[in-house]
Length: 411
Image 1: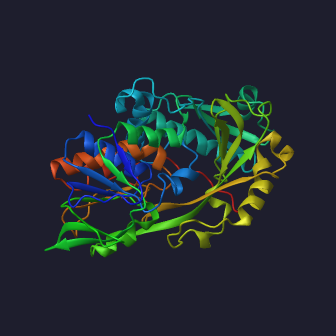
Image 2: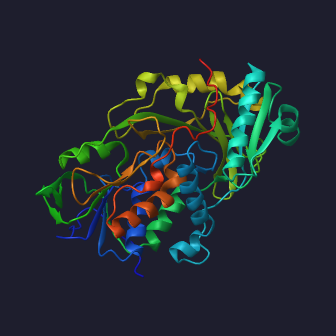
Image 3: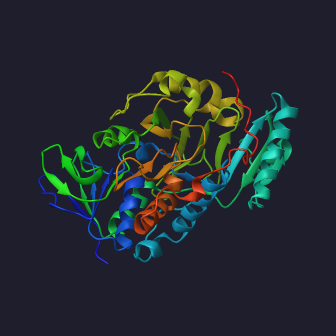
């Protein structure tokens, strides 16, 4: 198997390809990797910028967990986690590491409205047990504080699963690139997807070069709808501004064994941040920190920083964590991007053939699950391309078969 090749500015794209993948984030890289492994012919990946994983992927928490609200999402992430655990074997490079940390995921509920919230946690854990996640632990506040000393007295209930955690995104991306048999072109923005008779016929780049192809995969995150429109295909997605913070802290302050921690009522989460093999601070993410007017934004690159995000994190992050008030927030490193989600409430990514244009496939709208679900989603999509079928039936989820939803606090 030949290795992936990255061709820099000035390289000429081929005149034809069997599959063209648009988008150099993790979803696009995983799609190109599995397509090349499926022996579907020459696979070309096009990235509009001079870097891979440079939009939302670079701002990701890089976490992976199975506690999701749809059975389909659980199974897709489960498949991805198996890939992560055996990644060197998957890409064929013995000993290759993505710095996998199986420190667990810890969900917290506060003492505010404690009876209802604790009951809701128990119902959610019971649902996961019924759907095969028997190792999700339900804890009361005292049990949680005994195990994790950073929790304060406001924690009323928690649930925890050990076999989860986070990884290194650049290493994951590099592995897909090095282990693949596809060609990757940077600085290769796509102007339009060309069609003949209702089918894909090629991809026209901004410099007017043309790649003739019968199969295109759009994996361009927030830019996916714009690209689909050039082929006359409607794609209903929403883009949400996404901010994250990296807070440098002394290694003595943060225990590298701490899990990914999520305040279930706020949606704010954090985890230890590793630099190389050393814990160097914490990573903080929180989608709801910004007003809802940021939840339907136009595609942007770069995504501008909103200072209100930092102010909200300072104020509310200390709700359940003892050490939060001791963080200075003076040397904050910002990461920004955009979540892309379906224009529905079903919580599922858009994976499959577009019904309006033959040969046009979509792999996007992971709604913040791009890291943890990209291998499973890419495998699914490549299977659909290989068999010539449309949207996989496993992604027709019954919305009534979901765990009780957490009670979100009104800020």
